[in-house]
Length: 368
Image (cartoon, rainbow, N blue to C red; front, side, top):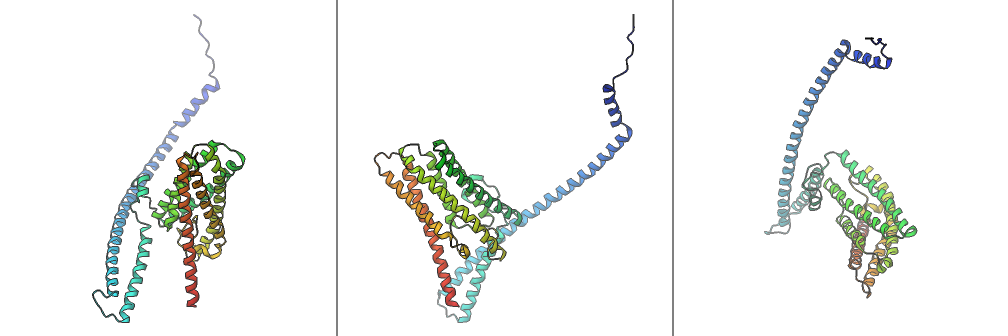
């Protein structure tokens, strides 16, 4: 029987074996073992650091609870003291207070106000229970950010979110109003509005929990806008919808333009006031007018008032449409009421700010 000659092994087969021999040589094995020992040491350090972290975290939690309880007790005692001082000033029971005693009461009351503001600043860095809205949306989740950098980063991201969405909504409303007239695009636009305003309400609630002093109406304004956008989304296509469509899109186009102006100028004003120490670091740009905007931003007032009265015009138009015999959609009345609420809230809030600022300026001029 003939035997097959032994052929040399091809280089392609010999190469992997050479690599295996190199990897499992004694020299490389010792290096691997030394690397493993280093990893074991690092792992032990990580465990120790993590254990220390958990220990410090428990200590921080205890300090948070202790501080929150102390503030609550102090608030209660200050409230009782305020009531007692009020009774003393009103002579209940009858007291003959000297001018020095009245001055002392005034000083104590002023100190109580200062302490109340200081407690507000302290609580911005302490965990607190969520309000009803955040509890319904997020549950009982702690949303308090525990350092200034995180708070400011979240506030800055909120401002950028508003700016980007304002530009997107401006382009979207222009497209729907002047380029394409499709009900599907209108529905997508209203879906975007609902999502935008819902997101704003959640983010603003988180910002309020972290120390932002957003006025009540400007928060409620977004709830009404969410409801209005949702009603517009459900309004079926028809003669009445088409009758109001162009007016609605034109109003939104103008509103987005004004919001862009507000952001641009309010952010610059806030930056200057924060640098001067006259505004809180968590103050935000808003869709209305506040007293701190008076310095250099009064040119916004005509744009704001025009937008407010456009809301009134929208409301009157919808109420007239509701009286038409062919009107059977409930959305007409609901949108009309929503625009009326927005008009009254925006107008009265802006007028109150202007009046308060006027009175303060008058008092300052008299004191000078």
